[in-house]
Image (cartoon, rainbow, N blue to C red):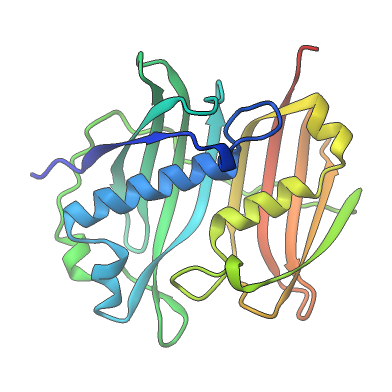
Length: 250
C-alpha cells in the first residue's frame, strides 16, 4: 500500500496579501491546489497524466476553515493527502502549518474526472482506482448535505469572463469563483469582518466570453452569508457557497 500524502512549502508573496498584510483566501487555496498538483504528479495521477487520456480533474466541492491567516513573507507548509475514494469521487484533505507547526487552516475537497472531448463527468479511470489510498493523516470530516439556497440577493455583481480567468481546462479557474464571491461584498463588511470558513460547491463551468452574475445575501445565522454565481446568458447555476465570518477586533 502506497502512502498518498506529501508536503509543499510556500512563502506568502506581496501580490497575495490584503491591506492588512495577510494572505488572501484565494491565494491560500491556490497553494493547496499547487500542493495537490505536486502530490498527484508523484502518484502518477496528475492532470497531465489524465490529459494523455483526454480527461482532467475538476473540483466539485471544497470546505476551507482558517484559524489564523499567514502574513507577508511568512513561510508555510501545506500537507495534503488522498483521504478516500468512491466510484466517481476522490477525496483530498489539506492542512496549512506555520514554521513552528501551528495549524493555520485546513480544508477538505471532492474531485471528479471530466472527459475533455465530451465535457462530461466520467467514472474514475482504472489507473486511479488501482491506486491504494493510504491516508497519512486522519481524514477530515467530509462536507456533506445541501447548502441553503440564496433566495434574494442583497448585493450583486456582473463579471465578464476574461482571458486570465481561464485555466488549463479552458474554463474559469476555481479560485476565481472564490474571489468573485468575496468581491461582491461591500467594502465596509470586508473591512470589519474576516472570513473564517467557506463551503463552496461547483456545479457547472463558465468559459471565455461568458458573463457571471455573483449574488450574496445574509443567511438566518449571524455572520453567515449565502452565495450564488450563475451564467447571465443561460441562468444556469455555476457555483453555490456559504461563508462564515468573524468580527475583527479594532
